[in-house]
Image 1: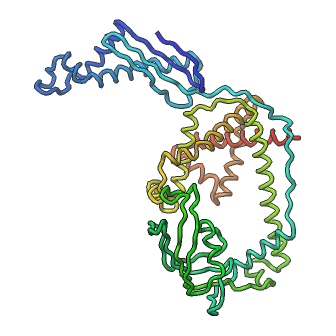
Image 2 (image 1 turned 30 degrees about the vertical axis):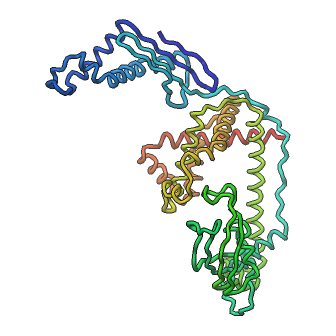
Image 3 (image 1 turned 90 degrees about the horizontal axis):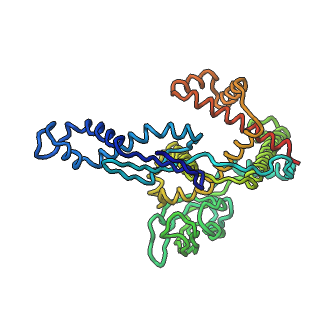
Length: 428
């Protein structure tokens, strides 16, 4: 006898019970797989069945359970219209010679009670790029283009944006700590690449100065042995380099691939306007989606969150590999554990899953779909972005055996974009 019960947390509990001749028959069938099993003291193939049952009980029971689940599970989920979102989890197994009971939980798509998603009262910010912003961008370009020149004047003092070459060694409670020492280290002052006020305390010092820098490690520092602790660094300035000031003229503009200063200014402003438009648009979309998700009721399955965490970690691992690192090496260097990292992305993963499910429900309610004719233009866009031919992308995907998944992902993207367009157009 089988039974299905709905549980909280977007799960179904499935119970399979078998007894009598059915279990006996299954056991006898499974035992035939063990007739040539080896048992010390017996010739292979001549071991009494009761000895085999006793010796291989765990393996025999496991095979019976797997057989029952394989035979019953597909029919149970089909008959009860259950759509699993992950593998089931065994919660109870009881088996004897003539009786069997298996209980497992099946995670499913949650029921979603949508909040308001039309006519949301969210105003879109106006993009604004001032002349001051453009001038600041040009100043940054001038500063980054200037060659570094070592200051020869012994009285010259280090200032923000200077590159100082330093030796340093850190101490906590009078003891040097691992990773706190370096010689000949180039540090650009004002970048915030060192903790606390380390860089600020170098400002004003001269070449060959030796001095102490007192700082506090952040509470959330990656190394537990240093987090939140005060430290003293002994520092020596070896040299000070300062970017030479570059004059703003047409010659400089040409070096930056522009025709004139006026042309450079106009194009920099045009680029800044595009960036600002994009920022404003993305912020508007984020607020709309956040509002819909916030007002919707949904019990996100833990299995889906775990899967999203796995995806995030795999993505991070691939990024590290592109830089010549591995996840294991990263943990070794930072002192962080896989468990701590999973916990750190738990909230963002849950929000990502909830957002995906809510937008999917809006698309379902509004009957938003992706037509086959809309797929090809998307592949064209992708090809242009990667500097490839459309046919080359399709060939690569087919070669990898991922064509169907590739097309499904594009259709998902199209549906998502249409859904967001619906939210945008109806916003007040």
